[in-house]
Structure formats: C-alpha cells, structure tokens
Picture 1: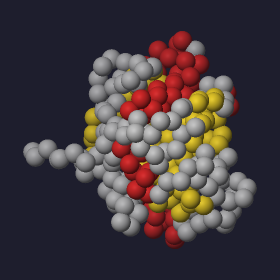
Picture 2: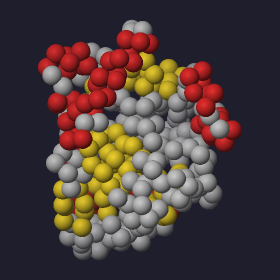
Picture 3: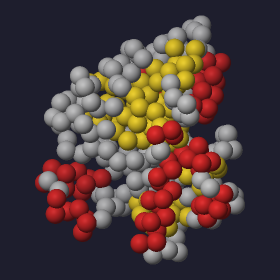
Length: 304
C-alpha cells in the first residue's frame, strides 16, 4: 500500500471540499479510503486536482467504495468499458443543465458518482452541487412536517407534449434512447441517509408527481421545496481542469452542469456506485413501480 496523507480543504460553507496529497491511481490503503469516505459523507462532494487516471483506474478507485453499476440503465456505455458513461458534450445536443440527483427513477439510485474530466473548455462548463441535507434543515418547521409525509414518483419519461415542439431531431433521438425502457419508482421526499442518519430532501429533476396530489398541487410543492435546495448558501461551484476528479454523495446532493460553453468541447466520464433502497423517516422503503433495474445494479432479477 502507498503511504499517503490526506488533507481536506473546505471550499464552501455548507458543501464541498478539496482533497490534497492523494494520488488516486496509487494503491491506497484501507485507512485512506476510510478517510475519503468520511470526507464524502461530511462534505457531500469532494474534489481531487491533477489526477492521472484512465477509465480502468477510475473504475478501480470507485470500486473501493462498493459494487459498480453498469454505465446507465438505458444510455450505452463507453466502448470496451461497460461501467463507464462517456459524456462527450461536444458531440451531443443533450445537456445536464437541470438540477437532479443521478438515476433516481430506479429503486436503488447510486450511492455516489465519480466524474473524471478529459476535455474542458477554456471558460464555462462549471458544475454546481447542492446540499439537500442543509436544505431540509432550512425548512420552517411546518414545511418540514409536510415534507416528512410526502412520497413522490420519479421517472425517466419526459413530458413530450410540453417540450417536443422545440426539440431538435438530435435531441429527440437522444431522448428516445434515454427512455427506451421507462422506469418509475416511488421515493420518500425526505430520505434518511443510511450512513450519517441525516435527513435530506430527495427530489430533483426526475420527480414527476407527489403521491395523492394533483399535478398542479404537486408542481407547486416541489417547486417550493426545490427552492430551498438551490439557495446559494447550500451550493458549491467547481471550475473544472483536465485531470480533475469529483466524487459526490448521490444520497445527499443534487447537481447542475452549467451549459454556458456553446459549441466548445467538454468531455467527462462517470462511474457510479451501487446504492441501497432509500428509506423515509417512517422506516418505509422506496418501491419500484415500472421497469426492472436489476441489471443496472448488477443484481439478479427475481423470477415471478
């Protein structure tokens, strides 16, 4: 094992820290991995500058924190690397410029994601993360009581009637792939973190409707709760450099990739770690409604 010393430097008041003195391509000790995990839980997203990782090294690092998912439930993986999602924004019209938590439309959303920067524009293309735990803590008590009782359906299906008129053919084709299998899952709006015990708002861009409410009522409540997540004091913004690695806790964050770089090339690759089934404050677990994500999470489907 390589003897390295980990130094943690917070970079915003409520979320985010840089990890110094660590070479992620090295054979890191169990103690270092434990310290990185503790930093992840505390700071929600952690950053490593100047890393010399390839796709295999990225997968190997992520695997130290748990089993690895396939690249995505519907989107094809990087050729030759079934666990790596290649996000080459210079070659696609799709952008991740909405607030979301990764893959919440399945019953076991990822524990976390490891993102590696391969090509970054000279300006623009930052990513912003938000702390959903402090967002929940910021809610007035009466709003917390309401949120505690809510459950919401998350799905990868789009509202085509709303947006199809303005979509390019390229984006329509991407969305066809993204929704080639439709998933729906019922999740608690307030999730209990399985390691820290913290409560956080578990919402974001894949929420479609709150159970038991009309579409209008649901949209209004989600918009209100979401406004607490994205308050500036709950966020951190990262200016990427080639070689950077970001590692975020998908159970306690949302993120937004800022699409302000026009046609400049921007390429990153993502590896995700298998998560658990979310649990609400009443101890009840999320429930899959549509779609079998067992292959994505590398779990055998249960014969019925």
